Amino acid sequence: MTKVPVGFNRNVFINCPFDSLYTYLFHAIIFSIHDVGFRPRCALEASNAGQFRLNKILDIISECKYSIHDLSRTELDAKTGLPRFNMPLELGLDLGCKRFGKLHQTEKVSLILDIERFRYQKFISDISGQDIYAHDNKERKIISIVRDWLRLELDPKTTIIPSGNKIFQRYKDFQKALPALCDNLKWNPKDLPFADFSYAVAVWISENPFQ
Amino acid sequence: MPKKIVKNIHVIPHNNGWIVRREGENRLISTHDTKQEAEKFARRIARNTRSELVIHNRDGRISSRDSYSTDPLPPREPREVLFPVLESKTDEQTIRKAVKKVIQEAQSKAANSS
Image 1 (cartoon, each protein chain N blue to C red):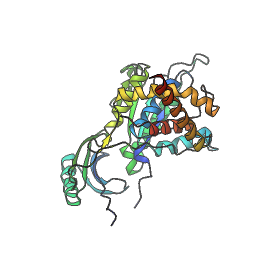
Image 2: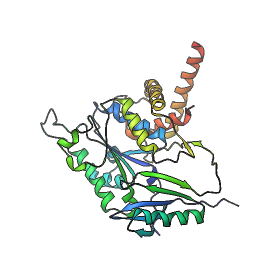
Image 3: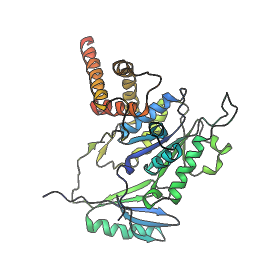
Image 4: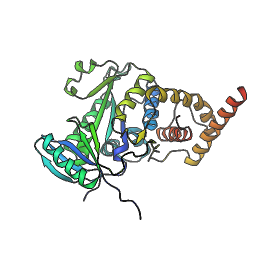
């Protein structure tokens, strides 16, 4: 009998821009995923391995039951004048995995984010019918959306998780601690490696149980 | 004697029908044309195995849960914090020590100011 890969039911694939203008939302998503009890994964893992990037992304997608796709930065790039296709491409790969993948992969669920709720209808209307939410470029809102979306997957009879507001407050506390942490570890706060940041978040959360 | 782990029974949409399968197993127990049939069948298994029945929507999200466990009031516990599977560039013990140190410093600073 084939087993579902270990961690599949708790892995969340984040498909979002990795530029400096989006970092504050990316970090908020990572924190929220950890604080609800899930594990964030993303394409930045690919840069740490000597593997063909697309293959690595496909591997990560196949190992995650959940995925968060932020399409809020698909506009034309100011320098090149070209649209950014990576996010829609990875969304398509994820939906394809759900449709054509193994039995457990047909249970994959996706959350799609944008700046405005119905803007997607103007540029990627085929995705209507999916869970699409607007974050208004706000950390508080993106944290609540991610928390509420993942919350449905946990049994409320046995699992306690913090509220969206509580996670936001905890995230603010973590942000206050981050400069000292970067000093201690000699990290560049403007260029934090994904795995290191994710690990630091997980340690901070486990050392700061919510009340 | 170690307690036997009871696996939840899931009713899941699959292609144009519905399937019943045990959690964590990549093999289906049965396939059904309608959700109602699948739910009825799955409920019988959950009742017999004293497990939990988890019913999904057409979009894959969990819509309801029914427990047939012998434990009517299972303890509610905070979620488990999961760590990355990817190796970090900085040694994990070093990160752990630094985070603890920063937390302790913040706590003693708060204690001194109050």
